[in-house]
Image 1 (cartoon, rainbow over the protein chains, first blue to last red):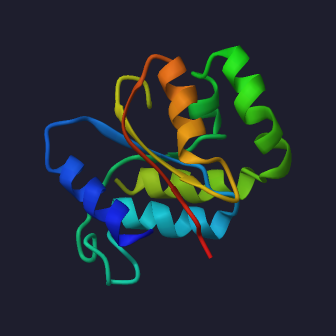
Image 2: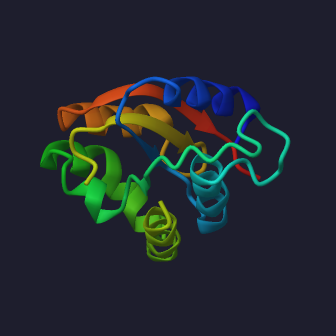
Image 3: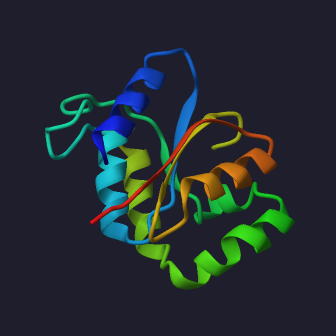
Length: 102
Length: 41
């Protein structure tokens, strides 16, 4: 995750907000890295979140936990095409493990 | 449960972009506090 975004997330997490991160990655390996960054800290140990375990619950936009709350018209218009080309199954496993560790 | 939380949307250029995630979640009545689109390589 780029350093600028890590910095913004760190600042937002300093506040009292009840936060969640929703990812839109196309590949599971990206999901794994991003999920680790916002839960356990930057795995590259180079960005603002290096060594900072924010423990923010993290989801993918195509997981049922997220898709099910999106209105039907938006789901069809904005997410249907992506859901046909992105394999969300391996991402679900990675993200469930990440959330269970919180 | 994701309902009731404030959302940070981190999209990807080769997946679902940040603005699309934000639009979907705002349509669901959720508050998106930050959105960005990354390029994961």
